[in-house]
Length: 77
Image (tube, rainbow, N blue to C red):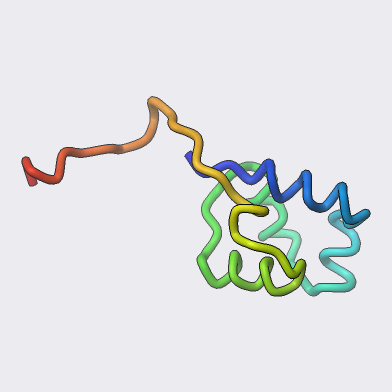
């Protein structure tokens, strides 16, 4: 599962919030909702966040193993 906790931690450290991301950076409320609920966002959105916040991707997301991940064995096809 992709977890966006690092993103929220980064915002707190930089005194940013939902309002400033929307107003100052043009991020949509739908994108913010998806981030808050650990839902899918595009790699373009992740790229834009890194550019906006002048940070690395690991400052925004992390992978957390989950029993709900659909992992398959590539050898079996």
